[in-house]
Image (tube, rainbow over all chains, first blue to last red; front, side):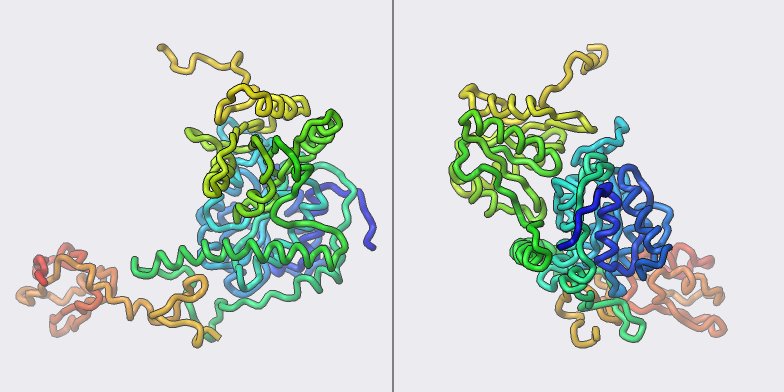
Length: 398
Length: 95
């Protein structure tokens, strides 16, 4: 049994990644991700990992380097955050379309403007539809373990898609927690070596990202969707195998916390779920049937798992760290779609609780539970505890 | 490795393409205007050959004879626009 160490989240992730033996790493510093790539470059410089660490001029460069390296048949890794992820955006669509199993981390951070370095999920949600699998960690142990699972799932021939592990900026990246680093021998056993189906090879020339006419392009895009859907089973399988090999559960599609008999269910992802679990415990002590469904895998969207987990719910509150301006949330409509498709028309309320690092104290979670289960009609979607007193005239000069 | 897995007719995982796709893909089908090399005032300057983005104009400057490959000519008209002797016309192609 491996020992627990007190490690900073970003550093723990760097060491977990190193044990997955990526052969090419390219990254550009951005708060709050920087410690991951900084530590990895140190590990490579110290000769502890036989990898090429490519210093690049931007996140566009970092993503392009791992695209090329992955196309050449190597295991690759990058990490970024916020604006950096947006700068990678175009390349990530290509990586997914070319079916390259690049693994990356996103230290979730707000997007400008206004400028903020603090946590929310708008960065990762902005690339939601590109074909990158997305996992969300609640704590640092999970952030480490999800990387190991991410490599396994991404490289599985039934999937062959990039995978991104999300860990909340500062709340996880900069927090010291007792963490068990994945054992090297077990990682080797769990992952094996990456063998590309097709790769760039001067002796057998081929073109990645070639032109397709309208008679073929749609099928190329559909194959990304198909692989995403197929990854659902692969994620479950890999997570079960992870537990068998490493002796601790990690990964998976969702976590059901006190939700089996819950009448009011909260749905959320990331580190906020730690706070929500405390509130759920308190409310349970008071005899209230409240539970949490934590989304661990956000892409592919685990529709069946979510549906099964809320089978006895009377009302649902989706607590979001993201937003889609001009629409009713990001994850909230997905929960509604899942229920609607199954003919379950129960109230679902969306709460944008935190953008740019706004704290969500336990009493905020409690207020949401009280409101959705209180019988009074609630808004379908709202920005929770918006400080209207600091707003200007919203239509200047009107 | 790639030879068995790749063909021009069927897609591969990741839409990786074998060599020869640019030759097989006859972009001449995109064309609405077609050049007519009149060959009345050609001075053999090679401007038409050098500006062709498809590389499908070819000829002999000494003999002052130039023509193009209709399989790949997209009808962009750059050869006609750049010809200093106005010796190439672009005409609507009827099919």
